[in-house]
Image (cartoon, rainbow, N blue to C red; front, side):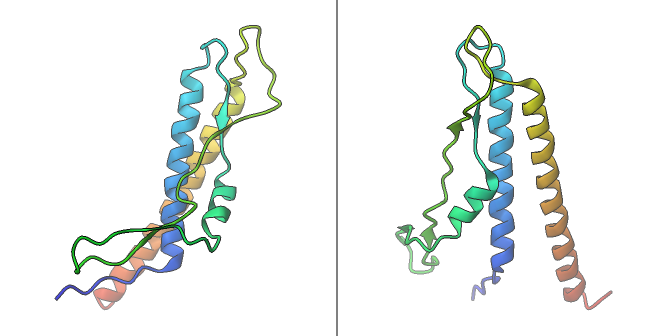
Length: 136
């Protein structure tokens, strides 16, 4: 008998947040990799707006079950995040607008956000482990 572990909504939200911060890190790394590419335009997205949009009550895509033992599920409507071109950044003569200082700040902030949520999740798992082991 397979008894599923109930997932708390907070844990799901933290997992989503960590996924988004990892995606933003990748996007910033791409901006930095293209700092010398002529006509490259800086790409970005807001983690906070993506989290807000993911919480909207939209039906999403229903997942098909191939086995009756699979859990019924939905792919959240806000599961994908599209990066957009950042407007208003000064551009150089080669039409590239990647700003090293801005991207390094973005990288640092995003790493800090990921680390904070990871620490919170670790603390929650330690509490759970402590409860399971009856405080031993």
